[in-house]
Length: 133
Image 1 (cartoon, rainbow, N blue to C red):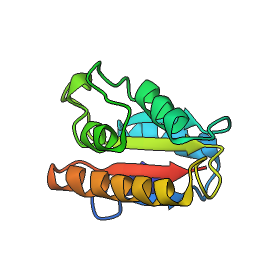
Image 2: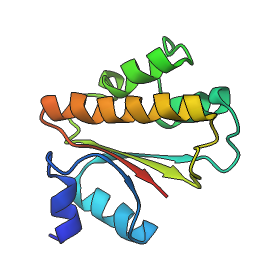
Image 3: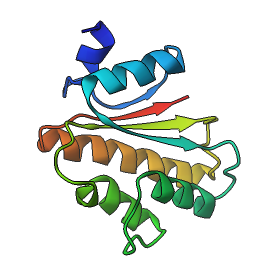
Image 4: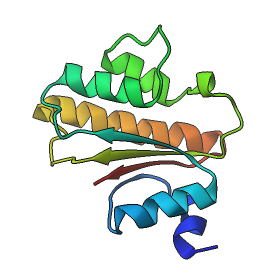
């Protein structure tokens, strides 16, 4: 098992990070670690609505997903519709610039939601990672 694979399973290290290794290395190690991953291409995201729709699509959000920040927070801390056999989660945001296609205020809210999701899953004993690539 590689060092990255082991680190991906470490609750203490889980968090929000700028990707510092090649994308294929991360993908391979995520697969080895048996974490469920979601990839979101933000290349054409230029608004809150587009961002929320992209995340909802990637996580296969249920019909109750309200396409607002409260729904995003609820969904990222739940994921029960995916089943409960997952060892943890990786959210990979591709083509992410410094704003994620959001206004400064919305970016701050999303960053808080990501950090809250990391904490939520840590308390459940599962790592939750967000990588910006």
